[in-house]
Image (cartoon, rainbow, N blue to C red; front, side, top):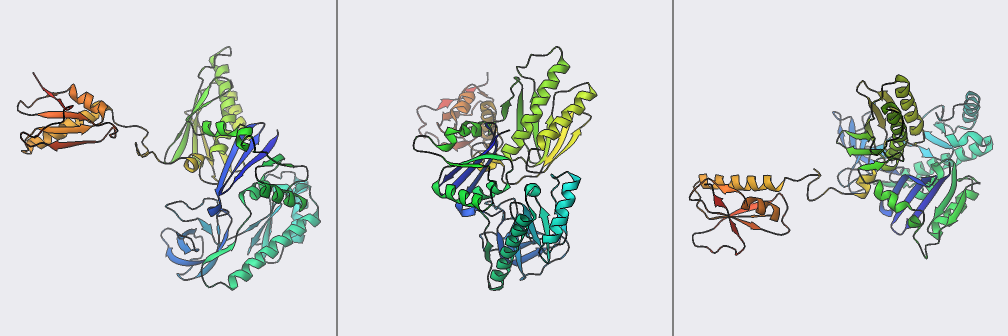
Length: 477
């Protein structure tokens, strides 16, 4: 597999795409105004403590107070704390989620101030290597701290690890010194940019291509300092003729990632729906007609679907509960093979994914820990027309509701004529309806541009002129 990091470092907003064998697998974006919220360190003042929520709200110098989940110890209002932004960034309605147990992340190590012991990444599985890293970690761990040894530590020397541990410890000491001199909430330490964080955290990179000269020079400097593997090629894209994402065919893949239907190579497809509590994915055989029987067809479609579902979860940054409705298979061996394929595909995800298996109804239960705002929320906003429902009332139903409202006005003693202003399809439907009331006078007026569900009824005075294009509703015979 060839993994590349493509960075569109435009002024004010940076986008980064992780491409594996030419296929977009992750998309990240960050505006300069919110750069680094996910790892930033703040000196904050506790503004409110909510024991029932097991949380506190902390003033960190931003527009909205940060949300601090609490575990054992309850702070008091007015307490000053060092807190760190977590994965979920601040939104228009919610403050940044923070923790009072900060850490300092490096390429190979994570320093945890106030902790103790050494932990090894679960992705390092060889027992001998794990034990060796535990021994090294115990020797180099700074006082009063814990160390987490990351996956990238597997092929470096003790001297390199010790150098990084001391650098992280020095950075933490600088944070403490700055906090001691602060009297008001504010930023203590900003982490690297999106570009540098991804270059630091992504493994097995073959190439990094970036659009700006400043980012290109910063990456080269980080590589010389050992922050990026020496074998990774770092290139500057020439955007004089073509934008960087266009050159790598990324923009069309982003557009496809926003659609509900995702086609599979075999001719099958996925339908992805987002609910309030979970994400639901339906697997369909579509145009797939190969295979000797239904079981073979189902197995092939399901196997391809498992790979694509894993990629779509990464790309769309799906979080929480995920339910996948695969095509039903009778053979238990095939069902177990599907679960194993799903687990192998999900293992490529940097986020934590749990595959629970298949239920009695053939639904695969999964969960994924989201790292940032989902792709659809990052790139889209709620529809101002349907208010997120995805549907509007039919023209016939709008017409019937308008007519019922006009009848209520008549029953209340109001006298016509009544003029119903509504969207053209509803006006056309009204024109085909009949009135029961013999003396009623009701007219429909089509208003171009009117919302499909909106109507208004005006009580016209006796003899008042009606619009020339108003259509009278006929009486029931």
